[in-house]
Length: 277
Image (cartoon, rainbow, N blue to C red; front, side):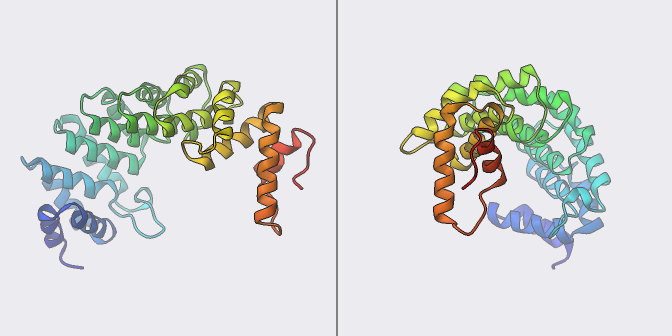
């Protein structure tokens, strides 16, 4: 690898694709020198320089098979990013800080991220959603509930995904937020809402789930819809779901005759007293 300072300098001048190649090099091999350079760069008056600092810090120490949270720079990088978010105003930099805090995943970042949930810039809100994914704290979940009604499709989709599939939490406000997305115009957001309610055994998912399962070309991710089918059938035993379970079983048996059907499918069929074969 080139000297760390040289890689950092090149990253400041590079186009987006090359920049991220260089940032990834710094994540893996930049070490303490990259941390020190990023710490200095965060004070630069040029926003793109501060943005680079945040991008480097967010996954510094990551590598093949190792997340940044398990690396040696987790604590120091977190301290710098938390200091940056207190005073930063530029949307691009705030997005990078929020994403970096999401990669680090420390509970101390929840409060400053939550404060940005209603930021007027959509890229900041996208960063906030990423930063809060998988956080179990109630303020983080409440922020995702708020963001699941965002005017931006991507923000709604990711926030709904966070509520549906990135937490086991289950309380009335969370379910209400998922139910509110059952009429969403964005198919990915709608699919996440179906899944989130289905895995919680909530019958409100049923009409939209049936509509998608019977559509010639269903919108949204079919894998997510099938997971929702298994979960809601196992939880409720609703007879309207049995034909779709049987169709999934028959397709699986036909395509992979020597393999056992997925355990989730077997559990769902057992709810109806039907075996997987």
